[in-house]
Length: 439
Image 1 (cartoon, rainbow, N blue to C red):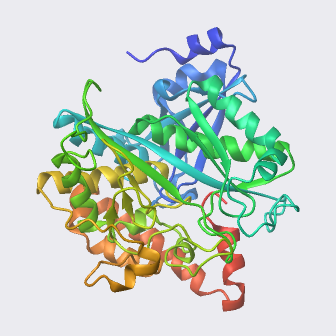
Image 2 (image 1 turned 45 degrees about the vertical axis):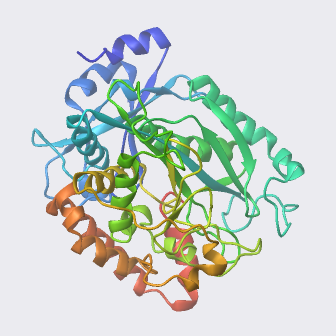
């Protein structure tokens, strides 16, 4: 039996709960529920009109009920009288198949049937902008190569400290914070966990960063490419598979040159086979494709892949193996839906494992300067329209997520493209900024 949220509220002095869910476009939705009503909500769920969100529903559909998961509870460090809860969606007594958290849990179940779990961590890059969101918030942050600048980092000490202190209080084990490659850009890292916990924390992290930034008169954005001349926001994922008891890393092999097992290489093989088809998941916004394959930025590099390749400890490829027992996927950007990101990784990995896919030859070259010399290398899509077509046609996507879920996602994305195409060309970048996921 799930622990009573009413009892938790009394014990932790929680006065209100945010019963939340994430729609297909990654937008965080919620209702604020007083603690005196939480027992009813825990049993029957908080009601929402699905059509009012980015889900494929109509105004005629029944109420959509968000059933909170007590295990996901996070007390807001900056407002401890409020507890945040991730939820699964139900309608007419049935689970909503297009709910991103449900999609992820179904992939986790497939791994569980093989007595495996996926552990993952994410590197969430973000910009701190002025309140209007159209300029970098620090007027002195103007260097061509601002990455790791100590003075620039310390000018934002109060904001970064409060976010990091919050993660420490929550037990996330944060371990480093830095100013990133673009002016106004930062990254904060916390310890990896099972992929559902990581996804829940990823959702909350974005909410927390934006909330704390607002306290300081700033606006935080995880938009893929807020400025044409600056490095975009990546969301790199670090992946490993473990046995169900988390006692053994199944990707680790001390006899391999890079410390990766055959299972790990099969997982990468699945990524190599269909990464381009899953770009609509890893790079889901129109703005995402301003980041992929972009020309060099002010700093001299984009730090984003444009081809489907893997390597050792080399950041110019889509996948790198930095040390034994894990690998990093550098495909996704800041607009990626936290749940669909993890679900997509499992889907591709399972396809690789189930079909014993080989990743092909490792490339130990600088893809930015020598990539043009590589023949027959698969390229990532350069626009959302192509990415949607590939996802719609992907048998791996249909088998993993179901044809129904793929069709619903594609329908909504095509609608987004139609809205964008109606804008004047000179207003295109402003439209992207104003309509970016979690901008």
